[in-house]
Image 1 (tube, rainbow, N blue to C red):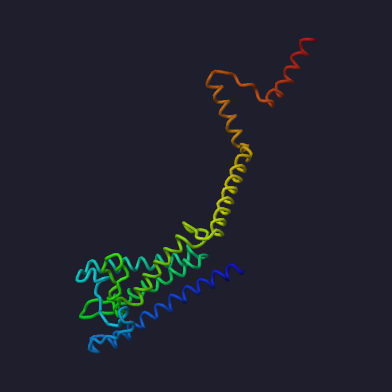
Image 2 (image 1 turned 90 degrees about the vertical axis):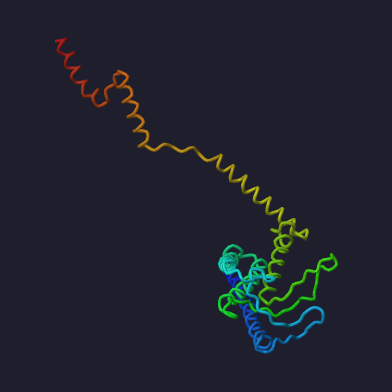
Length: 264
């Protein structure tokens, strides 16, 4: 009962986190559109100089404006997003039921995917489905030391959820826990080795058990069928079958009578 309760509690926690992030995404988009959108004169608010500015910009495409004006491409994106949302739900509630860190990252990604999906489904500007962006990181260039002018551009809370959730998920799969590809701590590595050794012992035990299993005894019906087939084969080869025991016993009195007559 405790185990079921623990799994249910983790499921509730992941669902709560996803709902909170989804609500945060939608409410910030609403206020950004209302206070910073075209109806407000296109205002901008500098939050962190040289790093973050609030400035509304509707995006009819995907990241970095890809797919703008391509209706078929955007329909494909919508279908793919819907499939991804369902797939993540299966991962969270079925496959990774006991792995809380992975489920939490997937819940964050799920919130972002649903947030932008709702925009493309219900929000339109000039008759075109549009995602509401308002977080401007245009002046922040994280790879400037490599000579790259890459920046995050303008995004929203949903984009941040997808990006950071995916990065955290990759980090967890690679390094966190005994089942990671490259466990970071010695304790996790030892636990992984112990589990592998236990699995190997179970395999050997099952193999020995199968080898010692007794041979199957043929059923009575199968023996009778085999004997009947053997008798038929003897008849075909011209051999004479011995009389059944009952017939032999029936002939014995007649033979004794004949012997008695001779003596008389």
